[in-house]
Image (cartoon, rainbow, N blue to C red):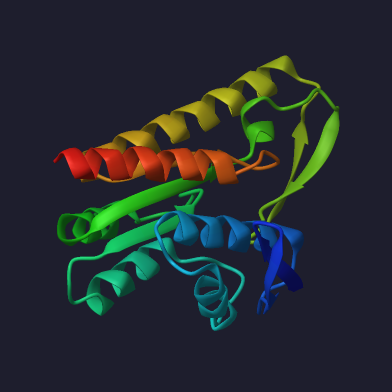
Length: 194
């Protein structure tokens, strides 16, 4: 997917992601924004994203965290951008956070928390491709989906906090630059005080 990266009103560079879809452009922009907030050159972050080689449709968060633990020799700031809807990421994350300064940027879709009343709809998992029919006309189904989503987010926050990771929460469809800037500014002030 190709797009032009514009920072502060000026074209920085053309970016050619090796993965398709507008959602991947939004993920890339959030990652570039996080890198910029952490002091990294946006063009350098974009070039790093261009070199990404997807292993397939599925994301393996646990393997990615383990790889980062093995790769990084010196204490580093590690930014993880994910919805953390995966299995087995908790132990590799704790291991990574024990040796490095970890920032977890969580991305959630608010439509998962408050499912609209739309009758029967087909939903597809973006990674597995699995499709299910969901009766969103059922109040019980909507309440159960909202409860499951809230519990998943609360558990994720608990695990991230227990690991000592800084958390930045983003939502799809909402601007991300200001929350990222605020989070990294607060983080910088806290580190200066320490």
